[in-house]
Length: 489
Image (cartoon, rainbow, N blue to C red; front, side):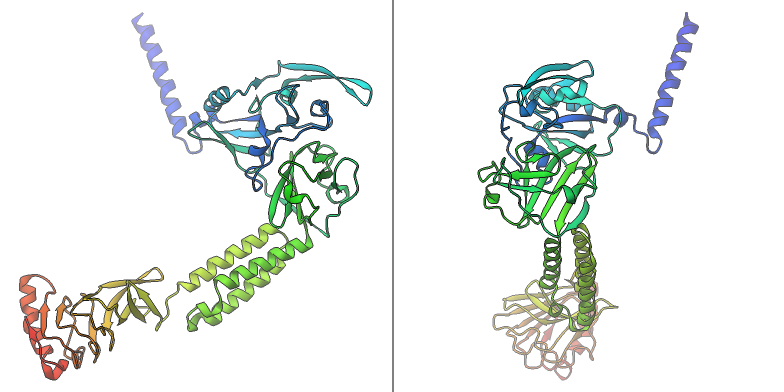
C-alpha cells in the first residue's frame, strides 16, 4: 500500500510540475484560457451604441405588436417578452475576459443563459396570414431579457469587448473592425408612407451590405454628431432608413437636415458612407487646427522656415487622404512633428521660468543666461532652469538682469561663471551671496558698477572651502575689478 501511495504522489507531483511548466511558457496562460470566452449577448441599444455614437438611443416602439417577433424584420434584435412595447436592443457577439465573473454578474441583473436545448414557438398573423415560428438554441435570444446570452464554441471574427465595472455595470468597446469607407456624392431623401424622412440607399451599399449580412445597427452623422437608429422603425430591408419628426432621440433630425455620413454596424464589420463635401470639410478643419495650434510665427526665427515646410507638407498629405481615419492620422503625425519642433532649443532663444527671464546661450552645452528677475526683496539665481523640457545650466548674469527697486538680497547659484558689466545696474540690492566657485577677475569685470551692494558672503561649500574662496574673491571683487568696493567675508 505504501508503494502505491508513493507512486500516486509521484504522478501527482509530475502533473503539478508539468502544469507549472506550461504556465511559465511564453504565450501560455492556463488561467486566462479557462476564463476567456465569447457569447452572443442581448445588449440594450444605449449600451450597444454608446462607444459608437454621441448620446446613445432609446428603445424603439414597433409599429405593431407582431413586428418585434417577426424574425424576418427583427433579425438580430431582442425584446424581453411578448408583452414588450417593442425592440429593446441588439444581439451581438461579445468577448468576455472572465466567464465566471460574467455569469455571476449576469445572474444578478436578470440575464438568462440560453442553450441549444431551449426552444420557443408562437404564431403571428401577418397581413391576414397565420405564420408559425419555431425558434431553437441561440434563436431564442429574440425573446429574452437584457444580457441574456448564448455561449459560442468559437471566437467570432467581429465582436465587442465587455468590461464589467466594480459596481457590476456592463460597458462595451467599439466593434473590433476598422471602418471600411466609401465616398458618395450625397444622401437624398425620398417619399415614404411609413416615415416623415426616408432614404433608400441600396445603390450605395449593395456591394457591402449583401443579403447574408446582418445589419446590427446604423447611425447617421449630421453636423459632426452621430445619431443612432433602431430596427424596424428606423432601419428596414437592410438598405432603407428613416425617421419621423417625433422619433425618440432624433429631435435634431426633425427637419430633415443634410446627412454627411451613414455608418452600418454589421456582422461583417463596419462600413461608413461619407459625402465628398463632408470629407473636404474634415480636411479643411484638420488643416485649420494645425495652423491655429502651431502658426509659423510661434516658432523661433531660426525654425520658422522648417515649421512652414512641415505645415505645407502636412496640408498636402491631408488633402490626399481618402477617408476620415487617414485625415486624423496625418493630422496627428503633423501635430507630433510640430510639437517636437516647437520644443527644439535654439541659440538666442528667449524664455521665462519661475518669474525670471533667460536666454539660451548654447544648445550643445545646454547653458542659459539670466536676463531679468521679478521685483522681490530676495532673489535667488538658480543652478539650472528648464526650457521646453530641457534642463539648462544658468552660467551667466547679463547686464541689467538684477534690476529691481524692491531687491535687497541676491543669491547666485553654483553654475554662474560670468557676471556681465552692469549686472546690478538699477538694483537696490545691498547683499550678495555667492555659491559658485567659477568666478574670475575677467568674468566679473564691472559687474557691481553703479550698484548698492555693500556685503558679499562667500558660501560655495564647507567652512574650509568657504575660507579658501573668501581669500580668492576679496581680490576679484576689488573696486578696480568689479567696479564697487564691498566687504567680502
